[in-house]
Structures are given as structure tokens and as C-alpha cells.
Length: 578
Image (cartoon, rainbow, N blue to C red; front, side):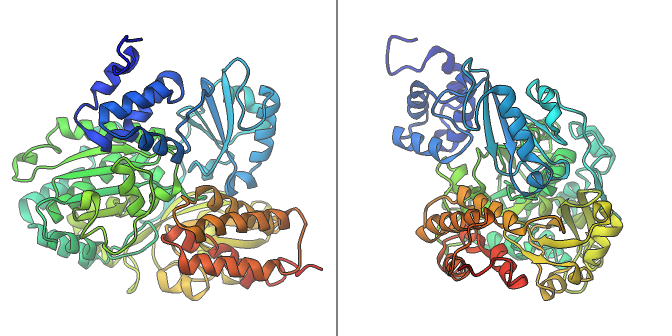
């Protein structure tokens, strides 16, 4: 240890030297690196980071406390996180947790006396197609079984290729075909040809016009027109603009973006570059959730490879366009998928949503015009620029252009990611592509649009999968998350787990969400255990409507959507009590 208390511990000096001069924006990355030394952020490390980045120590501790993947107390050398959200629960995650707990002799949240293991439960890991799943340090494991605990603890992953399907592969064209670490492989499949076309044959305004003509809307759930968003940022009065890829996919049942990032990171990067050119940005960010360590490593490699080959940096490919990208990690906070919370996190703060207006396209990252697009959205941009907006628009329906990735999990024979044109039926997706329900059991419910979505039943299987068709049936497209439940499932348990997720992930900035999500979870947990009381339904409805009307961001506004949908779909699901 240094004798000067103002100097960082010796083992932290090389780490902190990498962040010299970067300021607060480097806070999360610095905390990740210093945590890697001792397994947690020691008081000395927190002080050293605060001094190196010129951030108040209280703010450093505030950030550590906010993100669930940072630790202030010693943790095991191996951290075993077992997913407990809906798809994993259906597949038996409780049994995996119990078997692991017995083997280690500790309860969830505890560390073995020798400091070897910490056992935790965690929200969705984005491995829903191979549930039940776990994350052991930085390695994901799927298709777990109670008799496979030794292999899990030894951290020996099995080789796995995600199932991707459908019959029009636009975003998924290279997934499973190329080596995601190889720029040469990507170039062989036409990689960066769209960027070259944009830089040599199109003005930024023409790029935006093509994206508008394509009818592409945001694929993260909001469905805002992509070209309109780009145009708004391009017209903003500022010399500095930013583009951000939102790769913080964190909702239970969602895993399509992870499949794209791990299978074709260069395509997402190319889409981000084209977006930067279109709006006049010189700097971009990819913000990937902390629970996606493989995607993070692949993105770092893709950025490095692209920079070394002249696709990033000054005067890209001999053009006048200069642009560079940084990859940032989240650290366990679902709310950071909300675009203003994500920007707060990039700035080195707690990921709490901002009040809007102003909107990011006029005042976003560091107060400058900013475009934030989802992974799938950006993956669609290169083929649109290569083949034209009219071509892409023709792939869907008149009101819902192009293709959509659907992440299908739960009780289906072939869980996976399916890219299909808008306009097919839900039945076709679930039975012809995903194989139907194992054992030909009846479908009890289909949760469309993710944990914040709405329920359909077997009576709505012929609903059209586009924005108007699914909405007319009472469902939602959302980000393309679909979970299937057969007739053996207690839907009250499903609702309780969804409520637990939102209570865990509420950032606490606004009271309606902070208190409402916890109250909702408490009531539904009690009901799932058979303790139903008079007035529960009315109270849940009141809490849900209050959160929807008064919460600051989409987390609180949609935390009760699935519950309210279930109460409407099945009026007798929760008895009125005595």
C-alpha cells in the first residue's frame, strides 16, 4: 500500500491510469475494472476512483448501490446467478436453485465460508430459449438440470448455438453463417457495403429519406418512426450530436437482441455508423447490459477490428466522415433500457429517467441532440441502404413495414428467435415455426409484448402479427417477446413473478412506481400462495391505474399492464375473497 493516503493502492494504479482525463463518464467502466481486483469495490478502491475521475465519493457510492452487479462487501470468487424469471421458472429454475444451495450449503444471497462461491437469484439473463439458465462469473449456462450442479459450479459451459428461424432473414442473415469475431467473414457476406454506398453515393439527407421510405419503426417496443427520429436530430441546432445503440435488453422473455449481438455484431455496428453519418454525429456509444458478457466482448472486438481496418476513426474509407464508437457496460438495472436513464448511465450516474420534454433528439447525452436506437432497428439499416426503402417496406403489410424478430419461449417445442414478415398469424408462428406445445397440451395463455405486455388465449391464435392486427385481438407487438403457457400453469404464479421483477427493478425516483410495484408484488405473492382477501382485485386495479397515469417512465407506466390484461381476460382468476 502507498504511504500517501491520497495515492491509489498499487494494484489499482495501472487500472486507473487507463481512465485518466476521461472524467465521470468512465465511472461504470472503472468500477467494473477495480471490482475485478478483489471481487468487490473496497472502500479504498472507491476513494481512488473518486479522486482519479474527480467525482464526489458520495456519488461513487450512490452508483455502486444503484446497480445490482456492483458489490460493496466481499463476494465469492465465483458468483453463481440463477435466473428466476418466468421462462426459467417454467423450466424448473427452483429445483436448480435448491440443488445448488444444498451442494454449497448456503442460501441464496450467502457466500460459502471459504469465500469460494456466492449464490444469488437474478432477473432474466436473456437465455430464455435454453431455460433454466445461470450466469457463473462471466459465462452463461443453459438447459440446466438438478443433477448437473457439479458441472455448473466447475463453470464448464456446453457448446450452444441459438435456434434462429423464419423465412425472410434480413437482420438475421449472417447469424450462424459467419464467425462473429471475424471482420473478414462479415466483409465476405457484403459487410460495410451499405456504409460505402452511403458515404460515396448518398447525402445524409438521402440516407434519412431512404430510412423514412422503408417505414422502419423502432424495434425496442416504442415503434417510433426511425427516419423521423433521425431527421429531428439532424435538424437540431448544434455542432455536436451523438448516436447510441440501446443493447440493454433486460425484460423477462427477451433475447432477440442478444442473439443478434452474439451472432453478427458487425452489422449492428454498421447500422450505428450509418446513423451517425445521417445525423452528422462524430461519436457513438453501444450500451450493453452487464448480464451479456459475451456480447460485450464481441462488441469490443468488432469495434477494434473496424477501427484497425479504417471503418472507424478519422476520414473513414477516404471520405470526409469521421466517427468513433465506445462500448459501455451496464451493471444490472432494467430501467437503463429507458433511453433517458441509459444516457444518465453513460454519463456516469445512477440510471434514473429524466422528465420529458426535452426529448433526446434535441437535448440528450450531455445536453446535445442524440439518437437512440434498438439493436434490431440498427441491424435493419444496412440492408435498407443497400436495397432501398421501398424494397424493405414491401416485405410487410401496408401499415406494418418489413420484418420483425420474435423471441418465443415457454411451452413451445422449438423456443428461439424467428424473423418473419409482418402479416403472418400468431398460430403460424407458434405452431408451424416454433413447433406448438410439447405433448400437444392446450394453450392456456400467450403473453405478447413481454412482461409489460398483454395476454391472449387460444381463441386469438389467428390474430395477425402486425401492429394493428395484434392490437385488435388485445395483444401487443412490443419488442417481439412472446411467452407461451400451457394448461398446467397457475397464472397467478406467473403474475406474481412478473410483479416481483418490476418491484426489483423500480429505480425509486417516483413514488407511484416505487411504492406501487412493491405493493402490487406483495398482494400477488400472497394471492399466489392462496391467501386471497376481499378487495384485492379492486386494490390491484387502483394501484395499476395509478402507476400507469402518474409514473415518470415506461417501467411504472406498464408495470401493471400484464396484470390488468389478465384480470380483464379471466375475471375469475382472482376470487373476490371472503
